[in-house]
Image (tube, rainbow, N blue to C red; front, side, top):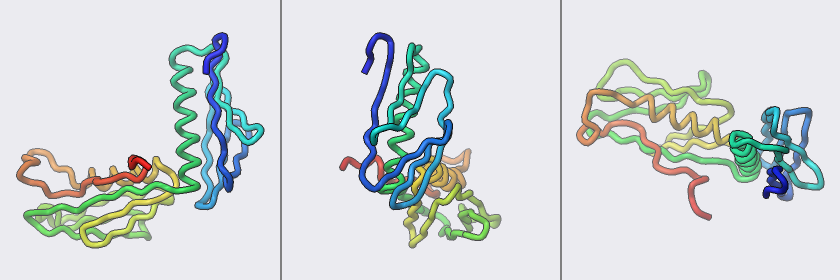
Length: 185
């Protein structure tokens, strides 16, 4: 809502979620865990009062308006993460050489063996507190931080990218097939 040059957005906090501000650090705690993020921008204010979070900018320029929307999206993702969580589904596809995918929790990485018949394994880093579960050709990546979950899934997809081959013929790889937050509820 814009009033006399000011832009402001309000976010209601659902039951079971507690929010606190410590300087510029915004913390959200819910049934699935706790997330914190630093929101520091010279022209954007984040304030928690009366069960709502207000994100505002006094005399915004175009980039300040965009930053208000970005902060609102980050806060909504944090709230959804601690209440519901995020899940990415991936599929292991091979037509030439059978791939083996295993999770190494000790080193926080996913190991892909025998990709395109290669002898050296490929690795994908697991970011943050993300959980990875492999069952046959299906991989599930889940967690409360959308950025960590998305980056882990992207690392797994990227670990099997190989240039110089026609993707219509050489379909081997790991591909993202679904995202829980993209499903219409």
